[in-house]
Image (cartoon, rainbow, N blue to C red; front, side, top):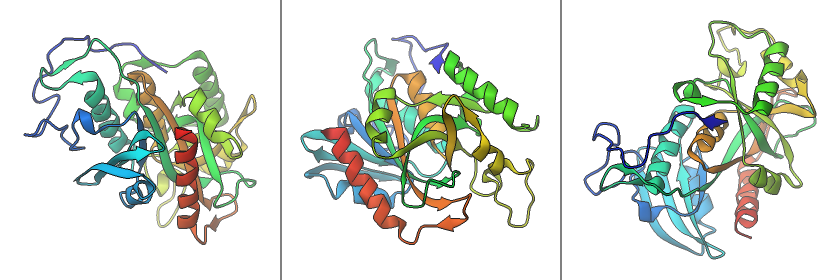
Amino acid sequence: MRATRLIPPGRPLADSELVLGPDGSVYHLGLRPEHVGDLVLVAGDPGRIATISALFERIEHRAQNREFVSHTGVYHGTRVTALATGIGTDNIDIVLNELDALVNVDLERRTPLGTHRSLRIVRLGTCGSLQPDIPVDARIVSTHGLGLDNVLHYYAHEHEAEEEAILNAFLAHVPWPAALPRPYLATGDAGLVRLMAEGNHAGITATAGGFYGPQGRQIRLGTAVEKLNERFTDFRHEGLRIANYEMETSALYGLGALLGHRTCTVCTVVANRFRREFSRDHHAAVRAMVGEVLERSTA
């Protein structure tokens, strides 16, 4: 995925468009440029940030505004920011744009910089497996994010040829209702995906706009697409399959690509939707994932 329209360096940004706090921090994250490490580990759960930073050699800065909790510190000599995004692609829209502003906008002059700083952004999440052979407590690394949300439709972009081919194959396989947003597809950073996938499962991640109906759950309401999960499980395209459901990766990968950042998602499986199983101790599995990702990303 690539951007087709970028705001040029030096163009002034109005106060209403780039909102800053009185201390010069970005509006939602409450961070200033000096608070951001080159490696950013994001998690939906604010409580997971303490799990990550407990492994740091030292913590240099803490901040919290609403669900956006952040700890910046050092691990194996690498400066790392652990940041809670909250749930959903709408929050990822906030997080990616504000992280990018912190490193690629002159906040005092309110103008995009002429130089570019690329962050490594790795999501540490939980998910539901859609494949019978991927059990609970396993880890899945997302090769692509299949966007069932609508965030990227608001940005000027176009798909790469491989993304368009996968997306067309998916739409030929699943009868997608006209009333729903057309899905999109974004690719994770190849190097990070390869690094994190060793010894783990890998595949396309379906990013849903909600937890219940958008993921095929039926409590008291029926869903618009019958047997949606079964169709996801059956999908194949040139060795790729849809491995899991979660709620953030498509926007992370899409906005990351458009803004020039390297992104990757690693998720612990807490539920197997095909086998209708749920982890008995997913907290231990998440802690193991955190340790593995920190070691691999700072080696």
